Structures are given as C-alpha cells and as structure tokens.
Image (cartoon, rainbow, N blue to C red; front, side, top):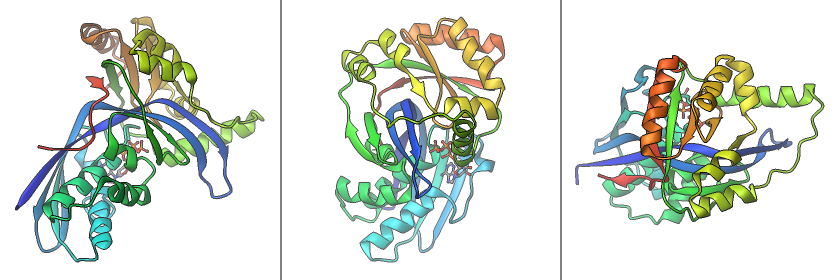
Length: 300
Ligand code: ATP
C-alpha cells in the first residue's frame, strides 16, 4: 500500500467542568466530548523522511514542521514500533484552527490511524489510545469519536450511549484563541472572585438527555466553565451567544476554549434556519451546519 487517507471529525464539548488547579499546573476536568460532522482529511504516503503539507481552512496558521501534531503522532507511532519509518502527510483542513474544536488533536488521531495502516503495524486501539494520551489530552477522544465522558486531563474516556442525532450550527470567529491563555484567564478570574472551585462531575441531566435523544433537555444542560474566560478575552462572543438565543437556539455555548460558538437546533431544517438568521445578524465570520455524534477516524 502506497497511500492511506483518513477522515476525522471535530469535537464540541457538551459539558466542560474545570476543577481546581493542580500542583502539576493541569486541572482535573469532566469533559463530555461529542464528535460532529466537520472533517479534516489526512493522506499518508510512504516516503523516506517525515514531512507535512497543510491545505484549506486557515492552513497558513498551522505549522508544517515537527511542531505539527500529526507529524508528532507519526513520530510517536514509529518510536512505539521501534522502527525508523518515513511518511509524507497532507492535511486538508476544514476544522477551524485554534477554534476550540480540537483540530490539531483530530489530525494527530488521523495520522495514527493512517500510519498504522500504511506501515502495516496492525496495532490495536488500546495501543493507539496510549500513544494518543501522550500527545495531548484531546487526542484519545479524537481516536474514539462518538460521544464520551473524559476525566483526569480529559484522557480517561467512557463512551456514552446516545439516542438519535443532534443538529448544530457552529459560528466561526476571526482568528483563534490559545487554549493555554483561556485556562490562565479562567484561573485569574476565579482567584479575583475568590471562587471556591467544586470537584467536577458529569451532569446527570445532561447524560439523561443524551440517552433519551432529547435535544430540548440537552440544550438546557450545555455548560462550559471556560466560557466566561473566553468571553472576557474576546468580548464579541457575548453578542454571538446572545444572537443564537434570540434566534431560537435550544442551547448555546463556546466550544472548548473558543472562539467558535455552538448552537443546538431542534432539527436539520431548524439548523438551516438558525444559520441563516445568524448570518444576517452578522455575528460570525462563517457558519457551519453539522450533526453529531459521528464516528472517529475513518479510512476512506
Ligand atoms: P483544543 O481545543 O484541542 O485545545 P483548538 O481546537 O483550539 O485546540 P487547534 O486547531 O488544535 O486548536 O490548534 C491549536 C494550535 O496548534 C494552533 O495554534 C496550531 O498552530 C497548532 N497546530 C499544530 N498542529 C496542528 C494541526 N495539525 N492542525 C491545527 N493546528 C495545529
């Protein structure tokens, strides 16, 4: 086999509960991940060295050297296999860069799956998940797809049963937000307000809404502890979120560390109407209609 192409989805967090800051600088999280139908594509082609090229949505903001998470994933996989494999990766991006939708993690997961296949390693999912956890806390979920609760730094995953499909509108913003900066702002705001931070727990009503496929109930339960920090750093997000509520979204929140905002709709038709109203309200650079949950990386 000379070349393998893998399609990989973005994620939105349905609940992101951020616990107290730990001594190691990380936070304990409860993270309800949900994979949605916005896809990057990664093509891995056999080559002697390691190289990467990025095309599409905001490609100029993605490194084309060893800082690229997909290249790091390929290197980690080769190390795990104890061989000096080579690969050329071409990443076609549709997932917004630095948008809180884990695009880099998705590309890393896609590279693991593509190179496992290309190099004929046949490693089981458990081995890939172990390598993924070392690459970043969102990479294991990117391998899994569907809907899952992540605990720890987000990397300990329990897949969730979800009835039916949920329909979403994503409002893309100009420019990204750095995840580290948003966490730092969250810590700063909590300290300034003398907030006592509770131990994070998955919301029972949220899990029930997912089990029942109840979009209205899910809309009422969407929460993101990073949202106040993201809105503080990017004031225009408050207007975007308000516009979604005014236009009848069942629920709205900042996706992960932002600045992408997610709006839950009642149906595919409602998602189309909502996207059109948000477009005329002029509160986003672009709007994407998507659904979830969708499976993780798929060889195409
Ligand atoms: P997360 O929600 O996982 O914290 P994000 O979705 O906000 O992250 P990404 O799109 O993953 O953000 O990008 C974060 C940073 O990682 C960007 O500044 C980008 O330069 C860098 N990066 C490295 N590799 C990639 C990649 N393959 N795709 C996108 N960004 C990458």
